[in-house]
Amino acid sequence: MEFEFFQITVLLILGYIAGIINTLAGGGSNLTLPALMILGLPADVANATNRVGVFLQAIWGAKAFHGHGELPLTDIKGIFIPLTVGGIIGALAASYAPVTYLKPILLTTMISLSLIILIRPSIVMPEPGTIPNRVSQTPSSWMMLFLSGLYGSFVQAGVGFVLIIALAGTLRYDLIKSNALKLVCTLGFTSIALFVFILRDQVAWIPGLILASTMMLGAHHGVKLAIKAKAETLKWFLFIMTLCGSAAAFYF
Image (cartoon, rainbow, N blue to C red; front, side, top):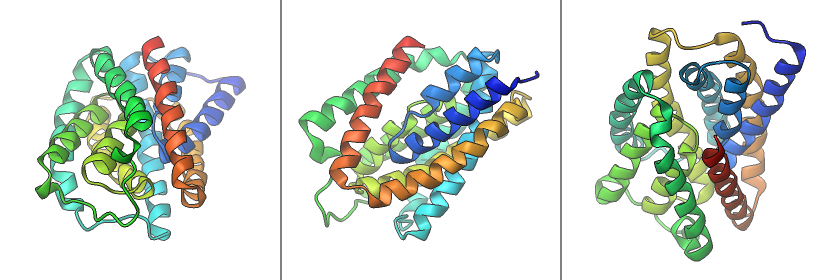
């Protein structure tokens, strides 16, 4: 497939915006997935191709958060076990099934998160000084992480919101550390999904790498914004992104 200058420019711009959104909240794939499909990629190929940028962006963003001392790794093994189990199941399902099957789940999750932020913000914004839980202490976090891996490998779009519920809501990490861990989690299940998609020859590498180039740049700037932003600012950005993500998921 040949891409014209305008199409490449659109992918570069959307990739940058998505990189920032994915780092600060989630839902950047609600921009990039429809764009890839509008450019002519079938839904399954667009879903697979989008993972190239997500994978590289997650590496770049996690490394940047770690450099700022905001990436807690004490319970990473406990986090990765349910995430990986869900990721394997979701990746295999995504390779064979239409992504539209999980749209109602995505919509319900994002609308619920929007309401939680408005009505009970303490659920996703623990008090300063709160000691995070371990996965072994909170069965609900195991289930949420499993569902995050399942959903993230299946379709990706909006998984950041599910991860924030798991990391901030059940494990009680603050929003900055939740966003940092979210990128590590994303790297985990995206690696599984991308491996499956590559084996099945479903990745369109040229648009994937075009997107990835600016998604990494967006992640780099997103980390800087996250470190400097106040918790209240991050909360409202997350709220706005959940509403936008809900609208995008409903429309597409």
